[in-house]
Image 1 (cartoon, rainbow, N blue to C red):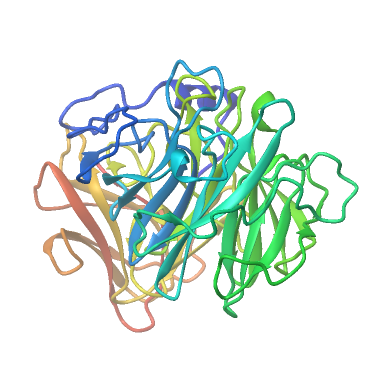
Image 2 (cartoon, rainbow, N blue to C red):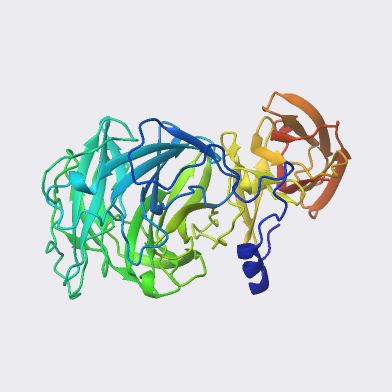
Length: 474
């Protein structure tokens, strides 16, 4: 059961990440054929591996993450250099992964020099990508900061999610002075984000200084409505970087609260209607440093994540990071810490929260545990949870511990390696009466070592219901 962490723990989590970079733990972003910091084009996809944050080892700010064909794609700004004194990006790159650990660098998908109408071709800022009717639409801003700050948004099209993309209009989709009828005087047309609703209608959100939206035509390269300003009620500040998604009938909007002049945060707001008004919900993540933070939220194999950039070492050179997020029963989201641990792997020398699975069987759900904790709720016969890349403690003594509650019907939590019907290593019998307080149960399992894909599988009668909070291998 998770509990709130103190400020000291937050600081510790930022500066200390599994001090041992050994074969026992992944640690410190070990890489294989690591991505190079280069501004040249990549001819062949490059494969690299990470074991925590950042997930991309070069400048990769403002990550917009999309899932296409059961694969995670990162569309980000490509910060040029650690020595840059301004936000200089000459192109956009695309990265992908199917396990959040091994990534493919697909190289440059579009360059600033490809955009004939760009006033400045090295200000290729925060993009997004959307799929419709088998085509992939890449929305991108071109910034002009000479004298007066202006921004324009273009759209490019490609046949695959990794590109390459070609400018579809040879002119901006959103010009510098395309605005909503609003009282705000300084609106900067950058940071586009596309959203397609369940009814098939698509929208483009964008804006620094205010959040704007317009409905897209079916062709995805023209508008079907006037520009509308989004109202966010009771917000603590809105600067830029909107990103919209939908879950259980609720529209969510992620955005940057303060921008580069502040200790920025990614806040969110919710609405029952795509055009709002939206109601401020709180913060999701902050890197805790002075400088901007942009990001997105995505679902992959039944788990939810926030993607954001942290500063390496300044807000002119930023890298993509991932954290898991969880929703309370009322739809609100619990704020998470920015960590170096990241996702996609597990350290079994400490308790592993059951709701932090990488993948789950159909209809397995979690529920609230107080203000900040969660547990897997009423797991049934045949349901399973998958935890890949589990690193065992060096002193593992073949013991499994779980924190559970039961329904009164006897059931089992079985431990398998490398598949829900893989190598069976042991079980814990759960026979707790309905309403029994949560209990820690332990057992000894068959010996194994190394790094494994672990599955916890429920077996029992059709009426067996097991609540699982965490497990621990020791």
